[in-house]
Length: 50
Image (cartoon, rainbow, N blue to C red; front, side, top):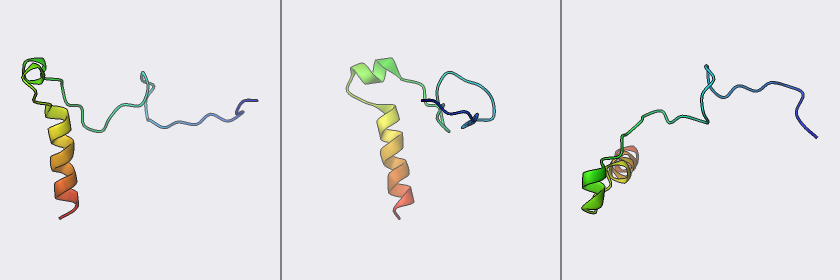
């Protein structure tokens, strides 16, 4: 069974669902144990919960 209706989750076609804010992976920092993407998420959660 499949849907007969077309659902659009984004305005334009793309490869999968894209994030609202794209953060590049800083590979050199990641190798040193720093995760800029995870740090951004945790900081954003702290701001939201204040």
